[in-house]
Structures are given as structure tokens and as C-alpha cells.
Length: 172
Image (cartoon, rainbow, N blue to C red; front, side, top):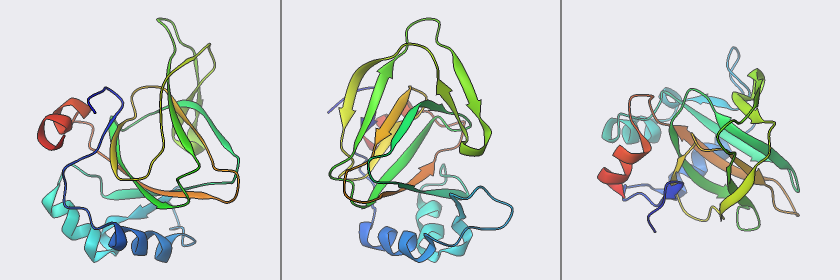
């Protein structure tokens, strides 16, 4: 599948180890960081992974989306794309990308580290996170959580000097 929204990276990702990392750190926020941020340096597997792929951030995110919750249409700021890894109950949820036209309007949400789209938006692409993807976070998107329980993912930002297109060429 070749598109501007996601691709399945050809990377050596041990999903079971990623799942253990997230479950071990799910309810352990770090003082001074956003509630969803965790330090890569605290997890040997993530340190090893980042040595192989140094464009990933020193911080990773754990995003639990409550059952039925709709993450508003938004743009992530401070990251062009991210590696998203399904951890638990992702099969009944959807990530949706939108076209917001030529003159979109946004509202900054500092505590969530994104800008919410406040203008009209039209759905253009939808997928269910069932395997790791590199996701283009510079395109407006939102999430609809599954109906039964929280959807949990690991989302690892890529440095600002590495684009979605570059990663797709290297690992797509």
C-alpha cells in the first residue's frame, strides 16, 4: 500500500517486547513530563532499538484511548511522523485522516501536544492499527476508540529533520 498517510515499515520490531515495555510503564507517569511521555533510556530494548534507528525521539508516548472516545481531528506539532505500534485492543478502533481544504483553522491544545481542527473536514482515509505503521502526523487525523475497552498504543515520534517521505523510501 503506497499512500501519504501510513506505511508498514520494514524494521526489526519485536512487538512482544514493545508490549511488555508499555504494560510495565502504562501507569507510571514521569514527574515533569506530559502524562503520556516516557523516557527511552529507562528501557533497554528501546535503547537498543533507537541505536538501530537513531531518528526516533528520546521520549516515547503511551496513548490509552478510552472505550468509545473520539480523539478530535488534529495535527501533531513537533513531530512530522511517528511509529505507532498496537499494544492492546486496537482491532475495533479507527484512525481517520481528513482533508481540511486550503484555509483550515486550528485551536492549540498545549496539554495534549496537538492542534485541534476547528474548520470543516472531509474523511479521506481510514485504517485500523493492527500492525506497526509509520504514520504521517502532519496530515489532520483523529481516532475513534473501540466500544468495549481502552485502545492502547505506543507512539514514537520521529525527529523533525526526518520526513515521512524519507522514511517511506528507506523502510517502505
